[in-house]
View (cartoon, rainbow, N blue to C red):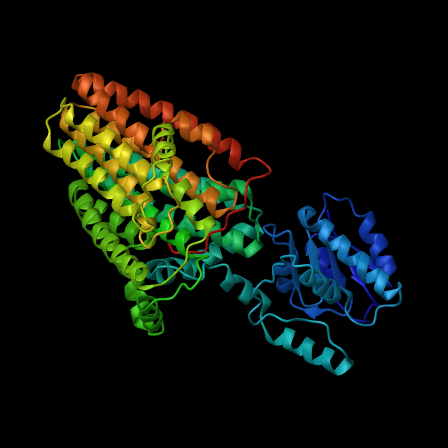
Length: 601
């Protein structure tokens, strides 16, 4: 149970006490600062506590946004401030100072607002939600109170709440074809006690059934798969809308939402490949290529954002032009659609699955994603080259974590740091590029069983170590992690295709899926300010350069059939290790409640 302490004299006809009880608060009253401090001290430390001015006038949803969001230790709106256990000490300290300064006298001005001012003076971070048209105020006199009450009556609290349940930035298909009705499904679910996690799980099950239908290889199965994939996407929108509608954010929900979208999409790729195989068409290479391209696109997004979101002097002519284009309505939607976000992408996959063949579906997906990747990456490269940003140590650390360097690269990097010749900042990406290109070229040009890819992998390990030997603060160094992803995944794809035996490409698909999960998991840990994956985990699965070297050695030493078995075993081993650690972390009390409102993926 949460506790709300109403401060000051009650106002006849006020609904504030009933509003707080409707939000799950046990309401207590304090006539002065000293009594408020006593009541605050009596609230158990593991409970949420709120200080609310008894004269508060506003919408219930304004109180909900300000006082019940689980993501922030301290939060406030005009006339109310709240603290979770992590922010309790700061609130207690500010209250003690106010009581000492005020001498415990009867409250005249808003104690909650004075406490907020004291917290700001301490440099304590306090979340202030965007209220938009919602009212939250402490009127100074009866006339102001009447005006505030009229403003509350003029604005439909529920309509604002329902509108705010929809993600503020989404793709065209999601905005106009899904959200107009999915928000009402979300409200229906919330009113019946369904949680976002339950809906997320149903969405995953629906997508897996869709993949199973696609795997039948029949026209009826393909049609059913397309319909179910769209249904899964609708539910995927609904789970987030329930979370925003009722502020049900959780660490487990963060993990589920962060990983299930990728699991659904990649499982569907596998289902399409299985369905095509039943019809005599082998498209596993296309399915794996689509997964690699999509994952690399996401890593480009993550790396660029991590490198620049806290950079100083972070302006450029290219960014200014982009801002101008965003002010023109139609260009916003065109630019959002051509990057093929999840809504447009899943709609295209669903329609093509139902109407055409898996091969055509993958061709269209690869062409669309390649164009989107080229467009977004080129724009970000231009921004990086034209802006004079100074990257922070935090950004460089995040990029190093995203690089996923293993024990081989770490050992080589320690040696390289001791050399007298130092490469200048900005050269990290250019150092890594030749080794990655030569690695993939060696795998492509040589026949299966050649030792040349092994030598190229050794060179790749050396150049990768050189790239991360110094902080990644150069203009283009955010390209280092996606370059490593493309080199590792691409090498696995090419070597499996060169093996040319049944099962090699499906085994490669499983290995890349397991490793990609690890990389997505790292991203969301960083976004939650929880640090990267633990060092023991990265070392135990070899790092990107260790896994690449191992796969090339296996391809050189083993027959094609033995190589397939080895890839399968490696995929299972990596999947077990990363899944067990990931589940342990995300269900732990210390995991961050990540809530992503960024670019639709």
